[in-house]
Image (cartoon, rainbow, N blue to C red; front, side):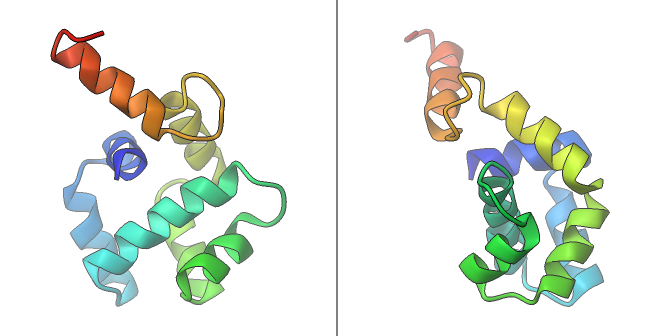
Length: 106
């Protein structure tokens, strides 16, 4: 969820999930899953949308629409790079480090 929160923060906040869900006829859970899958697939070799479609079971047209709505591959890349500070392909360790910093445990 950390990657999704960061991505949505870059494009307009958590309220964006409901907006995207309505726009594309999806549930908020589907949008959340799609965004997470797109973020993960972006770091992997191959087609981002096709990989995310395989992971989520959503149609490539819906995922392409979501990707376009957030600013495309460029915005996705910027958001994932911003969140993956150490470049290891996982944002979870980076989000955990940020949280530790917030609570003075770093």
